Image (cartoon, rainbow, N blue to C red; front, side):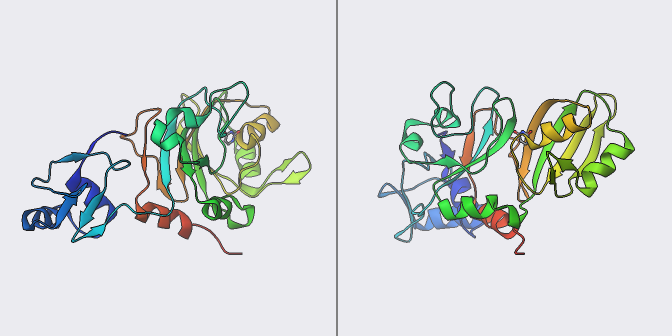
Length: 241
Ligand code: URA
């Protein structure tokens, strides 16, 4: 895990602003691995090091939630006989934590994979009845016609199953780039939807889950903690039907 500034870390995990964190440090209220922190630009590894504010440990969390920017060529599984899994992108410390991907992207799909060890959370956001929205950007082989768009938005038939409506938005006409928002996550769903209309998905990238967008600062293969606020945003995006 990359080292990060302590003031930034504390501000992203608590209600304190960066300015308030600086004040706490000045007051001598912040300790890193037991030693007094003297400067807000002190760097730390939030996975391996422990921060205390007024004697209270900041990083004790029962569960972990990571946002990973998945490159092509990795399967969304914890183990696979042949292929590299997304867990291979994590540091050895994280690999020993028993995280798993909450939802699958195909091997050639890139973008936001959520890794967690919180089984109830994963179950909740994946449950079809909760309709947690997932946003993808894709390049199609050809433009989608008005009739095909209507079919997708109204909920098309796929292998005898009526799908929930998907929202489709044109991003760039020339390169046939679209945004699509799904409320369910069936196997190869987007590729199969396009194939059913005689079209083909050439590239597919997930940009958001449950209202939380992939951090543009994460290069492919990089990951970071979700903030508490982001975890809550995803939880609150569930529909209780
Ligand atoms: N739909 C697909 O076809 N593939 C993915 O990876 C995700 C959604």
